Length: 542
Image 1: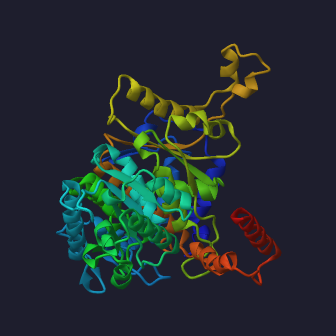
Image 2: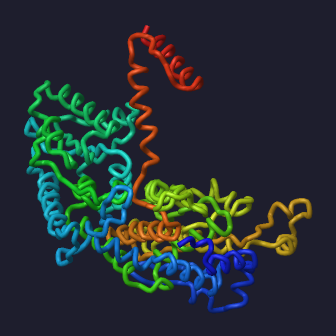
Image 3: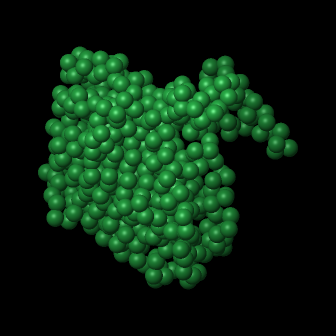
């Protein structure tokens, strides 16, 4: 169904034009905060400081029902092949399902296989953590380097940083993703090859960037260990589905951890892709994270839409994107451990919903995808908050905070949380010209100190950042993205947009490396850039 022609869409269009200022909405209803909050699945979600009324929520939910959101949720959890462009089921939810669950894909219950891999990961991680696993020279492994790209990097990096408090500090963890040689060089410059384990994460074991870094890692290791190729088996493990290519690389396939084609890269951090995280955290903490994911999954699957945190969150994103012209969303975690969370969300949200055609291949008739960005507070307050408060663009914000600090130091946490509450208050209500002048501000300065307010925000609050809390938080955003995709009628589980550049790069590589001047057949700009690069490189080699 074309939702832009649905009566609820027309109603929302009218509401967007007539919605009162947030200050007025709060003045009119002393109980507004109570009406627009959800306390569920271990998180408290306050969305009262949004440009909405009860009628807005009703219309948004009506739109979700018209789009068939409930049926799509059931289909995803059931294991239907809802990734239609790749003819695949979408079952990241199965990765965190309990052992007692049963989820069928092509008539096969996948849950036992998921837990079989998790159990193997647990055994392996325990061997590394205990020192039982020894490197080629008999030394204990002290350094773990994860090599991947996209979801094989962003998820593990984010989770490691987010849960660093719970990690084994006797181990060093590094992450390499960029094919830029600097990334590998800096990650390994102070490491001892005899104490280093590489985890190579590539489903097909053919990803160009990952395998280039993996080959460099092998050369680095062998150079440091005297060139004995048998050392590879003690210092490399693989997260892949291609036993043949893993073995050809020199990795013992007994140390290969698999996953399935129904696991998308940006949804894979709780699969074997998270092996580095399990080593860092230990199996118990890793399983706690899975339990948090599952708790939010179940809330999303079962809760009524008007009491469903991911659904409401997703609908609000659509509300601002399609009815207010908002182009971006700021994610502002007031928790230093979540410093990589906005970067993680960039792939999750923009790779998923950055689509211009509907499921049937026809053009979308509304703006899709929201640009996600952000930095931890309070740092952001001293950089880009100026634009959010007084700029001309509407930028909805998510504030993420926890009531208890993992590192309590004097008044620090109270100061941190006071900023969360103050910022949302300032964004919502601002400061009028009359209020500015009443402060005694000179008339020539007064306009510069006016805050219009009426800038929307959500607050997502938990008790403490634990492995389970991180799981809940990530699942919330995953399901919010899915909610939006259903209303836009797009496929959030493919990523054809990343492929074209890769294909063209494969054409250009031999042109850059050719000893003879290549016959270039690109556009004039690309031809000129290739020639300039070759000239500068040759000059540097003299």
